[in-house]
Amino acid sequence: MRFLTLIAMVLALSRSTLLAQPFTLEALIDESIRNNLSLKAERSNLTIAEARQITAALRPNPILSLGVQYLDILGTHFGPTNNAGPAEYDLRTDFILEGGKKRTRRIELAAEDRRLAELNFRESLRGLIVDVQSAFVDVLFRMDGLALAEENRKNFQSLVSINETRVKNGDLAQVELERSRIAALQFDNAILQAQSDLLQAKYKLQQLLGRQEASDHFEITGELRRDKLQATREEIYQRALLQRPDYLAMQQLLIRNQADLRLQVANGKIDYTVGAEARRQDGYAGRGNSMAVFLTMPLPVFNRNQGEIARASREGDQTKFRVDAMANRIQSEVRMAWQQYESATALLNRIEGDMLKRAEEVRKTTDYSYRRGEASLVELLDAQRAFNDTRQSYNEMRGAYARALYQLESIEAKNVAEGVKK
Image (tube, rainbow, N blue to C red; front, side, top):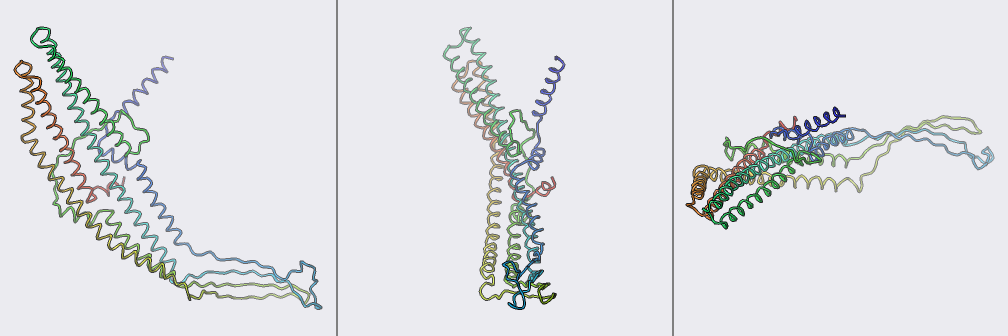
């Protein structure tokens, strides 16, 4: 029994260790590509498009007709006196010959739909990757916020301990001790809020990974990006026009509309039905066999598929405007992401170059002075608040800088090809 209990404890510990294993950004993207439910649904459109290709290539089925006529079921008694009958048995087969190359046009349209489905899948993949990257940045940002809150609590807990000693020695008023305790409790509350924010960020990230149940032991590892962009704004825009799946999908939709127009024109052409019939007569005068050949065609007097031809033509004109609108939208996305990148760069350089160091020095100096009784608690709290605001701004700008880099890479669809292979 003890052995089984030990085995269970080892398995539980192994499972806990596995759950706590930190994930890199690359591992997170890989898992999301494999398991994200929305991406799976979009991927299924590829197999649906392939099934439609099979349907498009099928030819019309032949028609088989069996007939029996002039049977003496009612007891008329066919004969020379009533000149009725004789009974006839016929076997007929009809084949539809499609005009206007309908089958070829259907195959062409289905192939264009398959290419469109592939581009739509790539666009969903592009969106998923940047969502995972943004959620990854958010978790790192919340982790920094929690670390700052814990650092503040540690400092003030030490301060409370010192104040308790000073009160016992008569060097500090009791009210000053209570004030420091209240300040420490406020930092405890900040930790609880930071923990909640971090947990929510982890839940969001795990949802993108396609996990049905989010784990509290989920951990990530990595650093916020700080590398410099190597391309100009115009280069990013031009690459986006060549690589963006949604823009390529819009161009593909224009090609698809042209294929649809050719199909609708073909559908306006008439189809021919050719048939052959074998007939046997069996009556009082003897037996006889005969053959017949048929050709049937509709007369295109009213319906020549004019409505669908007009519809396909108008959709093609509509798609042309959408292609231009998409190019303008991409240019606007590049402009906004570039502005965010430049703004985050300037603020980061400013905070790193001067503000962060000064805020840290003021906090340390004020803390040292307070411990020596040369500064008030209000002055210490003001210095701590200024330091926290500076650190918070610094963390926010680091996150904004990393998001801007990921966003610019997403705009030009960088790494989407690698994601498709996974």
